[in-house]
Image 1 (cartoon, rainbow over the protein chains, first blue to last red):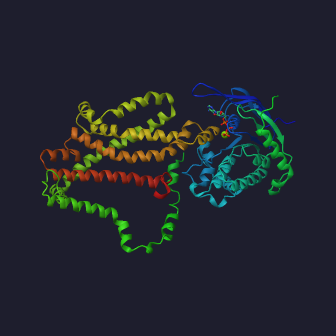
Image 2 (tube, rainbow over the protein chains, first blue to last red; image 1 turned 60 degrees about the vertical axis):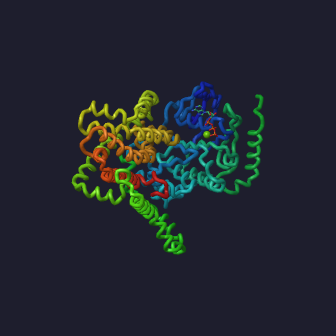
Image 3 (cartoon, chains in turn green, brown; image 1 turned 90 degrees about the horizontal axis):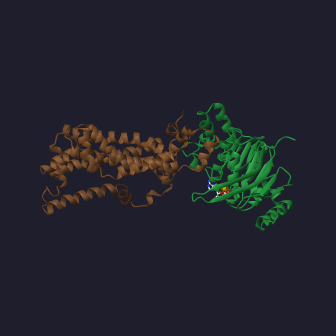
Length: 259
Length: 286
Ligand SMILES: Nc1ncnc2c1ncn2[C@@H]1O[C@H](COP(=O)(O)OP(=O)(O)OP(=O)(O)O)[C@@H](O)[C@H]1O
Ligand SMILES: [Mg+2]
């Protein structure tokens, strides 16, 4: 068996607040993510989802256990990772193309013609081919988030980390973006860790769903999503979809099991 | 390294929506008089104040050493030869601009240092506040004695009055950068220098420009204060000199020029901002 792309090994994260109080954000988190797998992490606010993402990205060091990528312990940010945040946070002084090529400019100091062409391809992939020269404030929230996705894909990461990327969007745009993401993902297969607190979103998108407990964040259960791919509007009416969503809802709102 | 600022300068001109918006607004629906009034209201108000002022001074026969009539100010202005005026204007402008320039040169790197290091900001910030809290007018004579009779003390005084708002605003701007962008930068391992040059400084530009606008006025004030203390040239000196001989209309003429310089510098900074960093302005002002 090939080693997992991402492995969480007894991961724990305790923060010290300014007042000196200890906050346990994550506790005893252990699971693996396989190559090109789409894993959704679902949990209530404050259960440590973003912390998990920062740990994989190497932005913070765990206080206990370890994250491994391709079997190597993460100690600093690595090149294989692209991140999409909750807010698109684009740079208002660049046009759309400038924003997509920004990681290149920022990391290497300049942008080559090859890279610019790549950025245009990515814009076509996220359906914004005609918007390359537009200013950021001329785009809708959904379009901005597409630009952010294109930006995250620029350096062709193996792993895509997404922290509630659609939660700032309205419901309609959100569904549209979910299908869009699935299309992008089948076009450019990646290992995806997708954080959300929307149950339907998790079920629609993921191969597996990691359900977390409220603070301190632990893994409550890991569920396989047996829905066939490619997923479409029809998936939303599949009885399996609803059964799974209901199960998760019950699980999230029940008291933690005494085990 | 391509600077983000230059690439903005060459970016497309202002999007055409504002024009479209005014075109769709029905301009003919209003009476021509009200349209004219809307456009020229500021000028009309200004002229009205001048007329009232002129009228009041004549009507109540106010002596010119209390409040000179606008016509008296104009007469006094014309009595002084143009080269003399230009000499005074240049002296004041030179000091104001040099102090202002020095303030920018010192403040921006200082702000970067303060925003980057907690230790530095904790040691330097209180010192800066002390400097800022010192009435510059009060220490101006001391500075003149220490630094001797040249432009140097005047530039230093202008600098001291001007730099603080620039530092504070720039620090605020540098620290207002969204956390996600900093995380993006760190995940790319781009380094601290690029983080500051590519992300933090551009983000601070709107704040910096606000401070730069305020500081134009402060720079003129600084130059005038310095001239009050020690100078043989400049508009501040001219006003002081005229007043001591009860040539109040002439002093007023000097004052008008000072106001004009302040407004001009303010406007100039606004234009620079509009040209170089249009995105830092609210949409309606681009
Ligand atoms: N740098 C930090 N210092 C102190 N406490 C922190 C820090 N970062 C996170 N926390 C705490 O850790 C807990 C988990 O935070 P985290 O942001 O990971 O939650 P989350 O699951 O992403 O929540 P949400 O769904 O609201 O985004 C919270 O209680 C938070 O207050
Ligand atoms: Mg979060």
